[in-house]
Length: 428
Image (cartoon, helix red, strand yellow):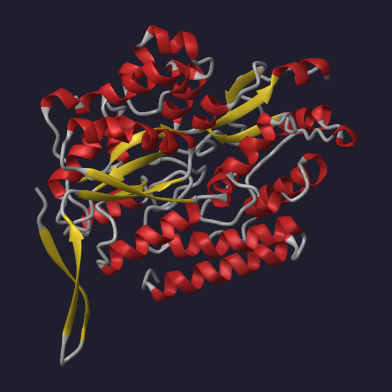
């Protein structure tokens, strides 16, 4: 049975216009990553079990998704009934009552969710987003190529060792590059990686008094190292590469090494892949990120009950088992539940499981830089202003990587943009 609800779409002093949406149809905004694509394929299973509920998908790349859902939540646009967000948005939006607190039945077993994920998606004890998959970052490399080059990879390598390994695996005449890293601009794109790199070199986003610290010697060292690494041993056009582009390069055999989200390991097809923890320079603090792509219900949706049902289904133990039955245990969404890592079939199928869990458990948002800092977060600072700052800085770093400006010019512009936003927000 269908009912209608009115949605105000415009108002003047003289008239009000209205449009109508169908009750029972959930509009879900998500990112175009492999696990989300699989969730869409399996959605008919949810619809069969819940007659009267249909699901409409809006699938976007990371940067566009973040922009669209942020605009919708801040303007109360009401375009989406379920949003895919992360550890940056969930506690901030939850504290502002922009999200519904999630409440599930006992069978859902919320205590099975890894504490790092549960904590990062909560505010004042309320869970505001449920993790669909969680991740840290780590090194994924071709052991056969490294063996052929006469090198090994320790579990906790230095950035200098990674540079040597990238040089050893590079054969540009053969179209083989030693390392692939993100270059596409975005606070959750190139800056997710670059922040962890800068952390390990002793850098941080803000000093204790909230003044931006992007013009520090540590940031200059890290960004210079990053650019040199990709200029010498990375593929052409690295400034345009994000997760999906590099995943394709890895599976085409064009990259010997990739430092990125642990979740990528489940999509790598070469049988010679091996794994190590994220590199360090002068410290391990903040050298590997912590993130969870998660599902949340925006406050004010008229589809709250159905949205909760979908999220409970998509982030449950049963959903993980459904993916395993469909595609095998090596293809399940990871990084969310302890029961997944305890499963012997998963351990046998996923050669990356141990390295992934080690990375997730070692990431500490409360202590992510060598020097004292006022913010929480590893690859981001959990303040509302960070999204604009991170986006602006990401654009400057892409310009540096592309050779359009120098490292010094890029960091000076980044410092200026961050300082302007912090002053405007009244931090000092």
